[in-house]
Length: 283
Image (tube, rainbow, N blue to C red; front, top):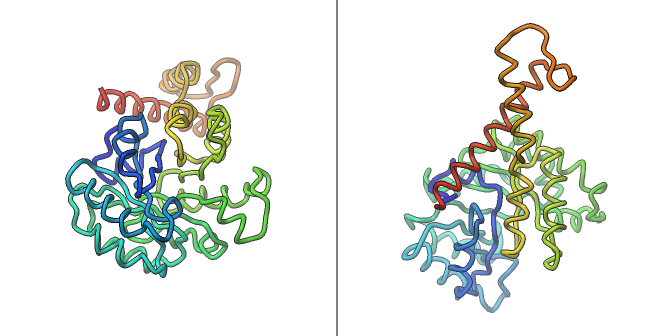
């Protein structure tokens, strides 16, 4: 999928980070099947390399190709310089805002970057979680995302699925209530086993997430697969939708089918259709 506007950012299943101070990796990241490449100016870049990373990110977005950029958080010493360097670049597709807590600050960023740039609000603190619905409803916010590692550190909790389940569900509900697509889940730190990333993505999909951050190209295909309906799911969805035209009480594969089941089937077909569209654009 070539992301060309805010709607594309909203549909992205895989968002692949690449360090801003490693420009030799930008093209490699863009050549993967990641739906969106994010040049990272925050966690992946050491304090002594921020200026160089900012310059390389701006150069790529200005002269080479479309991308998103994770800037340093509002209030961080590098934040204002990041915004100055990126504002007005025509191929900037999205800005990922870490430690998002203040809806007003996100609105201000939206006004600075313009309507063509999607704002992805990365929730990583207890304050951000409590304000998730306000943040999701802020003008310009296209997607919520979850930084579970920082969030766990902030609340002094484990990073296990059980410990993070309430937070993940909170973001899913906030996104839905604000009319946004499902949130983007945090990274899988295991770089040796793509299956672990796929399992994490499947768990997130089950909770209502519709995308995931990746930190290595090897994770991309596995995560894409986890967020894309398989053949059997598509066949089931088609049977349900076809049966729904008959009206009255429905039964498909021995199971009762009512309005919520039909909506779920329609959502499966939409996700499958989005994947086909993405393949056509990449081809």
